[in-house]
Length: 144
Image (cartoon, rainbow, N blue to C red; front, side):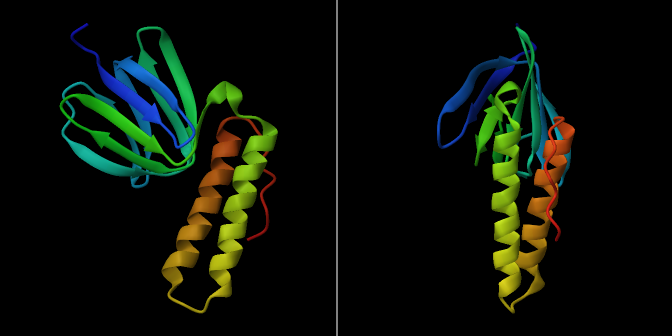
């Protein structure tokens, strides 16, 4: 299969997938991107979102909370802060992720410092809420 590349997705808890893929759609911090064989080398940060893998057995989706993706001549390696197969995402899981992001935002706002950390925490919270909505779960958006 000349059009396939190596793909790995790991989180601190486990290795979710290691195999071949024809395309990987990545929720990059600076925008979504699709990686196929022959893509230019790149390292990018991830935002919370859905990572879609097109492989020999069909399309599989994973929810990721952030992390890094390394694209090389050999393929794609994704190191996710947290990741779960789409079918393992439950209402309880998304609520936990959103609650953690909300707490981080509240904590960042307690400090009288540069706006960067507060803005970053607000963006993380917004992305977590969007992830829940995207996969059809109610993220119960907290007030900012």
